[in-house]
Image (tube, rainbow, N blue to C red; front, side, top):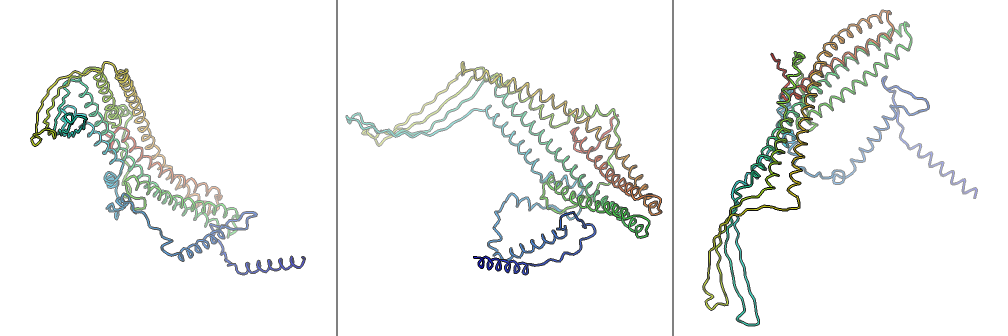
Length: 510
């Protein structure tokens, strides 16, 4: 028994040695200076993990190459709708201006097409309601074959009857019911048209905001590159002073950590550019992977608005805003619905007439070879009134009254919301203009302060903490300057949108 256990252990050890000897060894080079990092009780370094991940990826790629094409590549299901989006002919060779982006969005964004489709649906509904103003004509063709076998042959029936008939009905009087239904449908058209205009304004705002956000993201990349340049200068200055024996190793490490942090911020800014470009591509209705560039804004938009213009802008917005116009149309539609409900409680006067031409053939008649026919005409006038319908029409009237009250309250709520929206957007713009002016001064002061701090540090008059603090303030100043500039553009666009305008031009009132 002991010998068997010994042989088993010997074989297991041999297999283990063989596996270790056959394993592939990877020589891990020294990690770059900005990736050197060690933790206590963690033998696996970052660079080792990267190399192992790359090794696994290479092996997976080699295995994938060995798989037959019929297995590795599954056929894709064709999507004609997505293919039509892919085939959009858009010239993106040159950088696109904001006006060109808006033009592309109006032609390709599906939101506006959906709103336009709703408008056409409302127009078709109005035509349906108008059809009730005309007579209704119904034509039919009947064919009746009757055959009866009775006990007495004389009672047998074997007949054929066929012929056309026409019926005409006309609603002469309904106490305004048809007119109210047509008015209700017409107000639906006005509401849909207003929502279509609102969709256009929403799209313009979306394109403008995404355009300025992409521009801001690109500016932040440039600012991050400047931060990298400054922190690298600080790092090199600290190394030179350390080599000269003027400072300790702590200065070098602190400057190096700031340098590595700036590299991290740079990569983060580059990622934000990708995201901002994809968002802008979505708003103009093109695939996110479409390559395009934008023309940067040439200047800061006008900033001349006086405080007494706010009330005038609010009143202007109440008149111009498409969403308010839509709710006004909805209110009038509910008023028409009340009139229609009242009409249902009253009688209606109808005129009508029929015309029939029937032909008969009697197979039991000795003269069955001949056909008989007759023509009949009728005309009538009728008064129809639902005297009792289980209180259906009465409750329909109550429902219409309550919906009218709700529509009126919705309009009031929206008008109050618009007045607040204009007020907030106005002072957002007013604040953004002031912040931009201060951020510009802050940036100039921080830049000069950093230059003096670097010069003083090299001369031994300032510590590394003073230098790094100055660089941090300069980085913050760059970021604030870019953000405040973006805020000016976007707040102006939002103010124009809040007042129901399609552009960012602010008209001064006398």
